Length: 341
Image 1 (tube, rainbow, N blue to C red):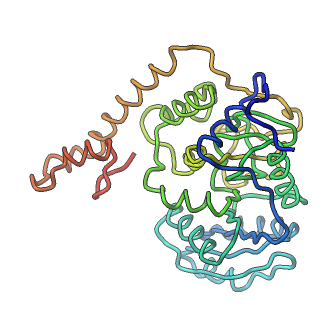
Image 2 (image 1 turned 180 degrees about the vertical axis):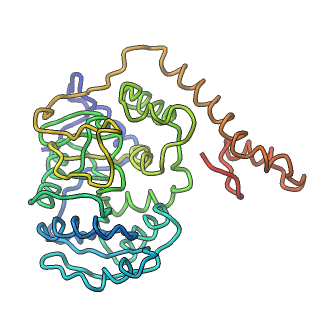
């Protein structure tokens, strides 16, 4: 039985999640046996990592996969043709996918949508999966469905600093990341349609989640890295786009993957373990003055970032470009050759 938003959720944000869904007219759906699930495996050289990652993907199976490669080396370019899967159904190899990680992600999602998949996933080549990950992924979608959550994104990769609330067997997240993510077809299309607007300062992310779910991400170690100096990478805002359209992001408790391409200790990333199950909301807001302060800081940072990145271009702009008019119209987000944020 799907729970109603009128139910008393106590300190949980579940009531706010469901209210947000009702406001946007979205309804929970569970995975169906006939749903087509496809993942894109994205690589650019780093063959040693790929050869460690691929067997852990293949031990799970039960889904289709396409391989999108942008390698520069001969060895990297040849690997997709040479590697033999036992369980994963490889449905296509696409080479010369250039332009950086964001372009590769956009290419992969568009290709999966065009191929007719109901759920479109991304896997990077620096992750090791535990056995049974795919079954667990489907299971947490079912758990969230029973709670009345409209799942737009799901993962078995999970870090404590990226969680809004720990529930029984899964968590509701403010960030999943592109390293391992499964998106509903609608969610994948939303991310593609809004990709140019996905570069945001940590303060803007914090402001959204504070206003919408009364959760203060400034207490998380990760968003604090992006408060000053630069915007967060695009995948930090995937989830915000989904919540703004009545969808939610969830991850497994515990996390079932291991990152081998980054130093998680250096980045202060704590993998979610079983002791965090049902822990509840961990970044609850405690001050009524936080929202006005964040509004002010977001405004100041946007102005500073615009002039810092574009001062040279503005100096030599021709009058016909009407940069000031465009500046106001796009709310400080330039597209015509200027840096976005």
